[in-house]
Length: 295
Length: 256
Image 1: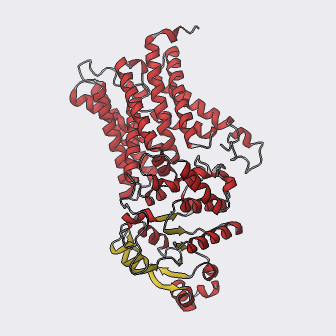
Image 2 (image 1 turned 45 degrees about the horizontal axis):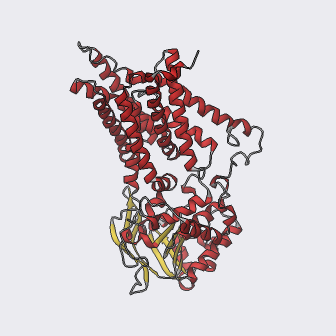
Image 3 (image 1 turned 180 degrees about the horizontal axis):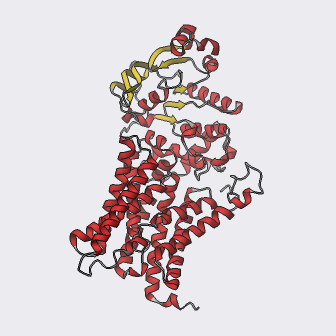
């Protein structure tokens, strides 16, 4: 097999789109992971499905920005309900997450079935939002993804120390006068945006892998938040490109392929990263295991 | 634009000499009173221990002064201002166990967070902030560990990092939640030195404390709290067997 695919403009377009999605997922996933909110990302991406289908059913068009707006709204609503259920009832956060994930996703599947029974052909391809089909991406979609990526990265860069304080010690952040609640909402909104970006290529089912796996992998290799974010972005981008490539060769949806690549990188890192890797833990005495590069 | 609305660098000198004045403070969590009708006054420049049994509302009292909990009734002023306007002058040392020490950061990264309040939005800490953070680390005897990953620290070292972060805040009122809990002798001595230095600099320090025996050694003022404020005043006159019995019940006598 040659390397002619790099010359194919369609492939390059799709690969760039997937790489950006992976990069953004890795960067924001780092904060989600460190704040122990990885499952929230999973619940939110599943909760996006009814929004996509409802937007289509209500307007009757498969216009991408419209579908993604619907996806964002319903992912947001899902996150809001998780917070409300956790604060206003005796249900624990993990149960609230499971509840929202399954109720929203189930409702989304029902709506999808309804949409597919429609006599017109307009609904064709909606089911691709389940597992993602990067080949669906058009030039203007990738341009939109690029724009959103820049926006998200600029916000993270500008509010770097604020997000860092929030992630490490929210009580202290509040004590020095940071509006912790507003920052939390902003960070969640950025994650919703990242999920919406990834729905086309990765799909609602596996989008959380793009948020969690690169960040978990990056944590193994460094002890600095700065490097962890950059590494996670890099791992995410690599997974995006590799997954798209594999998907093209094997002819499977891109979502599972990207998720497999991201999980592969994470598995390798968990096992073999210097010091923190499980393989070394067998040989090193306890206590030295957590020690790592000092920089 | 700073995180805090106040423009004053130093707090105004309180006319009545009080750093904190709390009146009729009641705080509830789910129908359960955590603090009940607390009247509390802390003179500026003292080292005050807050002692009381578990669930006495000690942490809640600190969080109220920071403006982080909403009281049912009562008023709080810090250097004559409401808590939200006084944050500029307050440094907070939360309980060490409140954070995940496996967070990817070095000792210096964490201490630098003490400078964030001075920087305001968006601005990055500069060389001056770094210098101040290193000074604060030296004050707790940890300058040589500045680049150590925080996951590798002992409990005592973690506690000293938190104290150094508070020192880097250059505050006028220091609120410390159980800084002596579960630490080694070196750390205990280092924190005692810090308290002495803050006293000498005229700063007010309030420490939630659990070890009754060291109260007279480390502090000159004490508050005995058990949901209500049982007693508050100079250790010499307030820290009596009688007031301890009122706070803890009979087992306080065994503890002394």
